Image 1 (cartoon, helix red, strand yellow):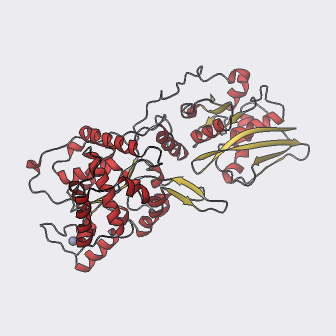
Image 2: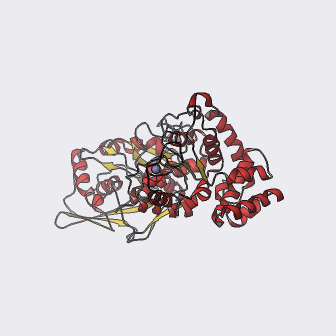
Image 3: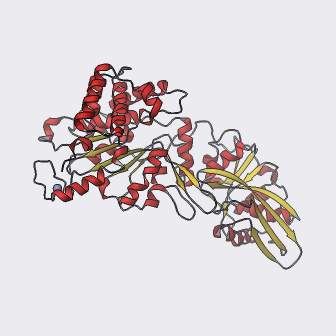
Length: 511
Ligand SMILES: [Zn+2]
């Protein structure tokens, strides 16, 4: 006997529906799974067998063929267990109430028959809704996550046995499941409790740089001796950034779903911008994603948020080089035997760096590095990556921290950033971009026009400081953000003059 069930898998961060066909024929008892299954899917047979037997049902002593279609897509993970079990039970006449047409089945089975959560439920349910399916059956632990998608019935089950015995009653509507929808889920604290900007004493120049970076989502690098608060400042970026809008929130939550990071207390739509801070021992694959079953890397986990590289020159060159693609294309593409997999990676890069290996170059304490070492170190910083950093701010050692004062709080900063964001959103409506840092080509020329005296100042700086063409454009974008923070449509001399000061690597690299 033959039956067909619907399962799903994830490619990159998008869900794909998979047909699970099961055929029983007479012959020697054996089971074959065809259609490019990976090892975890092959092992599914043993889990399904045990789950069926321990649930008090019979595993058929027939020749069983399971076909996963389409055949040209590699099937990964354990999410097919439930569909395969339902198929085998259906084909052997043990399903009193087969799932109605248009039902997606997702879940991993334990040997006892418990239905366990799997990563990627959110994109799978999103795909099911897009393809017009009526309902999804998911592990009970994933009900809240699945219910983030509007317009599809969500049925949560705890075990295979309970589901089979539930019959028609298993398909209760989700209102009866007691699950709220449409923004009813408070976001969980993705980054933990956020430190406040007012904790950082003094460093008004650094705070100003941080504010500008947040207002335009500009990549930012702080350069200064140890103990000047570079890291403290960067860790306060999330406290300044506006919350994710609906579309961004869904995109970010899907990434965390696929990465298996939406479990237990961490359920609901993510509204906070992610802040990722990988250690400098991270591999290139850890940073941008990879592996035999490609998983999102830090660059993708930082999508629509911040990727913070503390002590940036300490990161291996290969890892930094790997970031060039996402910084330019705002996504990561990983080549595989069967087609490439893409992960979104539109993040703001924040970095900190000492001015030299010992940390004291240019400060009042003597630097113990040789001229050559300093030059090499700076070359690593001002390489291809630094060229993609709009804002390079120097953090000097402070004389007397007590006298410096606390200055702006995160709430004050957040309000200024929010206003600047509104100006950008209004200006770029319908253009496909959202932030000043995304301006390029025609859009840059159109939206970052300088007043004549500002134009003259930039031309002068360009010539006298020997700025690169890229640096020139970055100053334009920064000037646009500085003007937005001042509530000005016009970009004046004052705005450009401030932007030029944030190119310390271009103007100060003399070793
Ligand atoms: Zn030094």
